[in-house]
Length: 112
Length: 114
Image (cartoon, rainbow over all chains, first blue to last red; front, side, top):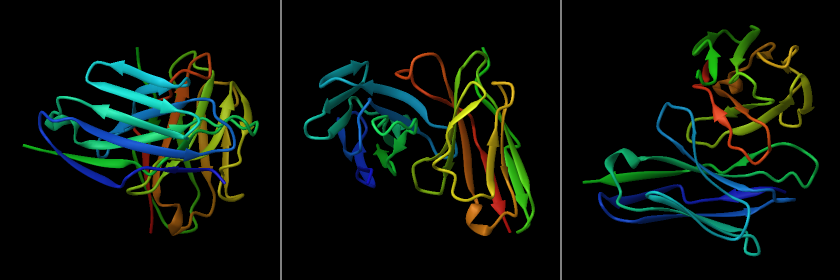
């Protein structure tokens, strides 16, 4: 089967750093995405990893290890507006399909 | 330019009614996806179009669900004989050339079946 696991909820303090982990088991691998989704809104793209290593983009960084089926999203200098759900998604493609598989999301609460 | 738009934003249907949900992707985007998102869950893939061709419909939960994109632009997701378990947010996303590009999501249609 195809499965993506990420923690359900996390809480962090404004100004701190938080790491949101994601593990995946899919029939193929053609890239991993992180999306941010505020309550009641559409997901918005944060990052994309297809090779092992760290991709940095301002306050957000994403890491991938394909051999371990593992990724994390690192958020630095947390702001209150970062309170949202963070969705890990994998594009398997290996089975010939075109679907993108999303995890259930990690709800991040940033407190003052 | 304009993003992905969806209509209606909210739909209330009585059990057994048919509904049609519309998606206007970003102009020129070849790929179009439909997802179903239940409360507190991530989006669940329903179907994928490349231009007018429906290349993957493996996520459609039953034969009551039907999607089309006849001219390779606007897409419609139709649900026949709606059931209470169909209540969810239906998200449409489009993607430009190259499968490594991110998907741009519309605001979704929140469907409530009474």
